[in-house]
Structures are given as C-alpha cells and as structure tokens.
Image (cartoon, rainbow, N blue to C red; front, top):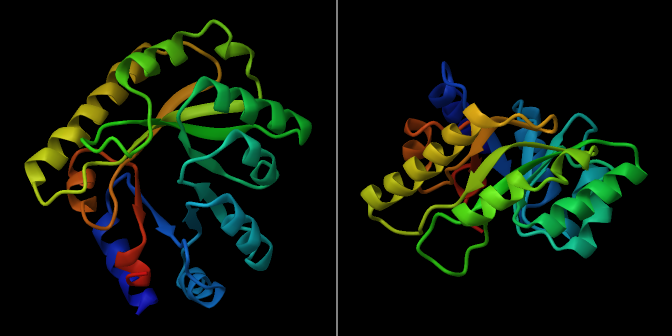
Length: 220
C-alpha cells in the first residue's frame, strides 16, 4: 500500500518543481524501508530523538528533514547528518545551528518557519520577525548555515479559501525576498507548504516541498 501511494504521488508531481517529503513520525522502520524500496529518499521527522534512532538503521543515502519544532539544546544531536532543518523560528536557534555545524565542519541547510495559520499553537516568525532576521547585520557571519527559503503550516480547517489565502501569502513573502536578497548564505529556492489534507492547494500555489505522512503511511 505504501509503495502504491508513493506511485500516485509520483504521478501527481510529474512535470512540477515540487518534491515529496515522506513524514515518517511514529512509523516503524519496516514501513520506512517499504517507502525506501519504492524509491523514496526524502524523509521528515518531527522529533529529534526519533530521527536519531531511525537514521543509523536506515540506508545512508536518505535525506533527513527535521520538520518539527527544534529546541536549541537538541541541535547538536542532528547536525552530523541532517539534510534540511525546515523549522527555524528564531535568530537564537539559527546561531546555535551555526555553532554546532562548525564543530562538525558542515554547512546546514535551513528553512525559516513562518506563522501563517490562525491557530496560536503553531510556531513561526511573523513578517516583522522575518525581516529582522534577514536584515540582521550578523547574518553573513554565520558561515555554517544556508537559508534556502520558507516553510509554513496552514490552518487546520475545511475552508479551502482560507488555506489558499495563507499559502498565497507565504508565496508572496517568498517571492518578495527572493528578488531582493544579496546575502551569501541566503538563497531562496525552497518553499515548503502542504500536508496530507491540503497538499493539492499547496502545489497549485507554488510549493516546492510537500510534507506527507498519513496519505502515505496511513493514520497514526
């Protein structure tokens, strides 16, 4: 079933610039291996501990994405292998990633998480916080991080117009900064938006990464 669902996503994304991140949180290694055997290489985890447990048990060519909220004291555990941290939501966290990455001689790719939903429980920078971070004069000195774009989670609602409005807003932010950034370690090329319940809208609004869990692995 997992392989069949992945095949359906492959067809859906054919001809687009959007890639699929298989969100494997709470799922056992055999499920991940079934996805891997079907050709999936991008895997997303919400929790640092779970990702650190799974990573050594899986093939080395997997691209691991941390998509959940990241605390500064957990950064050191994932910098040796993480491919993309999608959930950077503060300057302090960015500094910590840079510090830890320098110790293992890596450049860590990051996305800045933007708060676009109506729910207060979701994390992310607001528009003012995004501007302050990208205008910080110390940003060019963080030579062990690379900001590749933005990530956002839409409101958990059945109102498709609301979801579209939030994704469109995020795309507008992405486009406006992509044209005007001249910092060596900032290169806007990824826009991560869309999950199992709203990925079709996200693709229509220009997402380059969709984060899919239950629509691949089944409900938790």
